[in-house]
Every structure is written in C-alpha cells, then in structure tokens.
Length: 384
Image 1 (cartoon, helix red, strand yellow):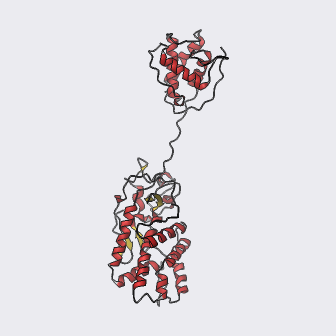
Image 2 (cartoon, one colour):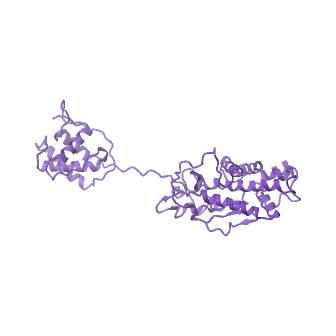
C-alpha cells in the first residue's frame, strides 16, 4: 500500500497529556515496524488495542474531526472502532489508490495517525475579550431628574435665581470677574462666560466622574473575577491609577470601565450626566418666561436658554481640561431640555457601542442624588 503524504490540518484544544502521548505512539510504532498491516474489522489482538488507544488520543487531541468515543472492548475491532476508523479516514482522505473508502487500517492510516500523535501539542486560543457595559441606570437617572424638577418648583424665587445663575453664569476665577455687576451687554457677558466657563455647579452624583469608582468596584466589577459588568476594566491598562477617579484611562475606548446603560444603549457615565444639565436649563428657561421681573429682561431670557447652555458646553470642552468632544454632551442636554427626564438622544449613536448591554447588576448599588449649587449640595456627604 502506498504511504499517504502528511495532511496539513489545524489542531485545536488539546486534552492529550504529555505522559499519555509517547506510550500510545510507541505501541502504534510497533504496528508499523511489524507485519501487522491491513488490520481489519472483526479481528482482535494487541495491534487493535494500539489502534483504539491512538484513535482515542486523537479524538481528544483533534475535537474538530468529530470522532466518537470507542466503546468496543479493548483489543476487539468492533462496530464503534470501525465507525471511528471510517470517519478518521474520510476526514483526512486516506484511501487506497483506485479504491473506495474502507475501514481497513493499513500502513497509510497508521502513518497518518503516527504523525498526528507526534505533532506538537497545540496551545489553546486566548479567551476572547468580553466587552460588557455597566449597570442599567435608566430608572435611576429618570427618578433623580424628576426629583430635581419637584425640588426646583418648591424653591423660593431667590433660590431659583441663585441656582440658575450658578449654572448659567459659571465662573472659575479666584476673584469675581463680574465685580461691579454683571455686564448688561449680551456679547460682553458671552465673552466672559466663554473665557471662564465652569460646569461644576451641577451633577447627578453616580454619573459624575469623580464619583465613578462604584463602576470599577464589586459587585459591578470584581477585579478577581474580571467582571461581571463594566468589563474589561481600566485595571487591564498599564499605568491606570485606580486611586485617581479622573485618570483618563478609566474612559479609554479600549475598556468599558465608566459606562452605564440607558434605554438599551451604552454610554460613558459622564456623557449621560449632561442630561442633568438639560433638565435644569429647562427649569430656568420656564422660570424666566413666567417670572414677571425676568420675562421682559432680554439678557436674562438669553442667558436662561438652551442656546446659551449649548454655548457654555462647547466653551467648556474647548478651553477646559476635558478632551471629550461637545457633540454628545450637547445631544443629551438638548434631549432632556425638550423631552424631560426620560428622554435620550434619538439620533446620536452611543459612545461605547461595543460594550454589550448584558449587565444584570442594578443601578441601585449606590445611592442616587444630585448637586445644584448653592441650593442642593450633597457632594461631600455622598457615599460612593
């Protein structure tokens, strides 16, 4: 019988131990060295046992071939041995020249089996990285933003003015740039706001980057388990500082660390936070339109508006320390300004689309509250 040349095949997922392989291979080599070729079904003996052991070893070594476990008694070339041999020969195209496939184990089959047992044990493929978003916080953000609405409506007029001025005429200067009064010229005021824009007077706390450690901690993300949610986490990135909540690596596009699900989409938590701003700006806009002392003041009406809020966001993103683009923060601000606490950007794609929304952890892992300086400040007392 002609010797079948070695056939290239992709080896997969080894289970054959290094101690088992040489022993099986040695017995198979005895078959090749002897006259025991053309071993046929319904025979028995040590040569059959060597073939059975080799087929079992190859079954574990090459699961892609689909060989079934041999159930015949050891050394007996019965039906299951014959079936395994036939499937092996068919898979690798081992036939005698000019003859149809058979289940006889000749020199060509023995040589091919010997080659498979001598091949270096393949290494298992590395596990695919599982990108999973953080918890679904759809209800938590909506309830928090509805609370902002109800709290604002219960404020005094003076509190409302202070709250709206804080978020819509924000400054981050050691001295008051408005000393002597707020400019009455809208363009002068706009220039001041663009120079000193500081959107730190408001937040939904669990969405604030400085309070986002809960998304990198158990039960949302357990470093020992590498999951189950907000994974892969930034602890897989060299140099990431877990003690610094503002480390930009926590928001790297290579991880799902600071992410949350809202309405079936995965977002950076800080991006969703801008929905807070939209809710607040709408409250201030409605207040300016209904207050008798403000409704006829064109500067106030211009400042207490969505267009002014959008200008502030763009100025903050341009001149501030946050490199994130303004498009999605603006989209969230506009969505909740027009649609209320349960609105989401309808046309904007989420900024973490590869992070699957399969997390089963609850957003209630942490307490939910908000900051609106100077009338509602729970930032220092929040436990995150």
